[in-house]
Image (tube, rainbow, N blue to C red):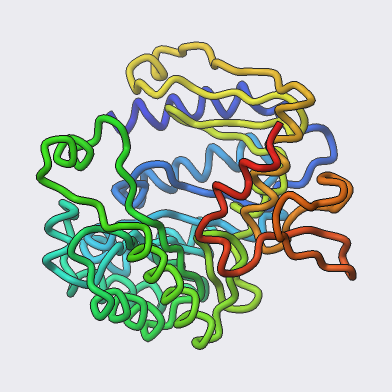
Length: 331
């Protein structure tokens, strides 16, 4: 199956050569949306080669791979060396927690010891490592959450992403909640955990540049920042999304078999209202905010205004309720 998948990527990459306008410069590459760390070094190298055959990657500044701790531990230095040889210079690792009871509850394949070992392997090979954590779930005490954050900081990573647990429709957790077998923590508990995250990371030298993202100075995710700035991007593979930087969004079918059979992309053309709403939603997620001219005189909410840049942004503490604030400005 891996061979078929690589062949499918090669076909799609070749048919997408003209996606970027002439003169465009590709600055980031991101392997994610699944478990790319499962790929063997040879399969990973094959994919990188087909990308280089079809696109000019000579100006790439950031090449990220998403990884699971158990894959990193199993592949060891051989796997990491293969990534380096292909130009990878940033790894995002899904740790989620450093407590075994929580990891088992989340049905993660790794344990806390593997998570720590994997991060140490990565920081020994790469100068830019991002670590994911999860908060806002039943059973996570203030002490354990503080320990999770502190452990992440102590391991020397350059970037931390932290996401609040959500009940997605149809998920196992949602079904348990419907049956009364899982009770979400209330908003005040989650708010307290979010503020703790902000305070510990701020005291540890991290800057918050987006709702869920914190970095040491100079280590923001360039790839994700391009999404929020509505820059064009091309996605390859099942379920991958693309955007032309203006009005056209498209996406592949998520079913692997149909994608391998060459199913047509789906897509939409954005209206002026769609574009406005996107700029508001994406811009206000970030500490940079949006240009004042986009919102006009903002008296709907106590947004922060930077007279130097001429931009509105959501205040640091209000980031926790950013969704509600953003809705006020949508058309």
